[in-house]
Length: 426
Image 1 (cartoon, rainbow, N blue to C red):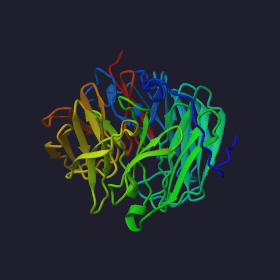
Image 2: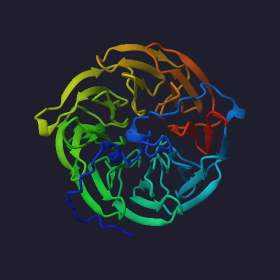
Image 3: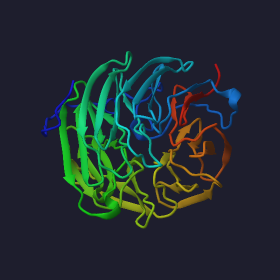
Image 4: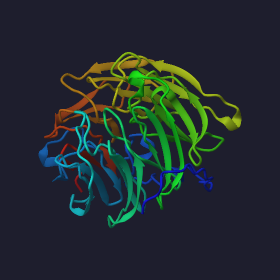
């Protein structure tokens, strides 16, 4: 079905209850339901994961339609991945068995071909999952689309047309879930848009839209995926990082603004994450104006205003999203510099340049280690520690700009045209 995007609907949703339910029932070790897993943290629950491996160690490897920068998502015994065909932009959605990579179902959707930016693909957005559905987004100058498919069968559930998408670097918005809403940050070069759809029907629940306030680079589209923050007292907040609007908190059921800190001169590509009760947000533009901040979120119900606790000023990533584990903040800067910051104080503990490496995918944590793929097709592995401890560096066989997924003790790696699984052999 098509849900009309022509009117703004503000509708109060039912109370969601526990935060574990708010995160799209994603607490199970068998799920990795959105970009960078539960709430975008990048934290996997695997207790063991090899720090190095060879071609003989993969559990399985399969070919994908060329090509895509999107990341895999996992629910129980299914792993899902998207591709965009290079010749005509056709969108391909695949469901595969996590045990052997066998194709369970595949869907194709007509889409436009256009001149892509060299650091983008026709399939860059990572899908979102819940028990019933997979939610996929794509877009181009002719329009951007969100669809819901039956997770088990691949059959159509609904389709929503978000309208034309105008951005120099093209589309890349990854959806996320809250309660019974699918939320998409659909910012473009000259327009800011945040919308929520009913996850079961595709009907528009609320939509916030405004023209950009400034010109030049700050008007570039935002690619950060929002996250959720649950205060000790008060309702859950939707945390959004974006261009000249900086860091904002919204009431996710209605789109009502809770608070906003206009901290950034330019856009956000890396996503905001939580860090021991703080929000870490980043503006890592390629020019002057880079900034990463740790924020104590405001809580309107308690009269608490948001506060910037400290800035991180060096070795900031532009594209990769940071990782927080055990009160340590790990930053993988695009040019190949990795740094570690104490979350409590903002003090840099170490930094190290990885020679001949560029990072566009984001790091994840699994089995006590941190994993991040380089655009040249290498896996970099290091200990999640207060000292720099490299553990592995090896070829994956093909270039990649994706982020690994970790579920049920297995890591899923996506290169331009392959999907691979690694983990302890049973």
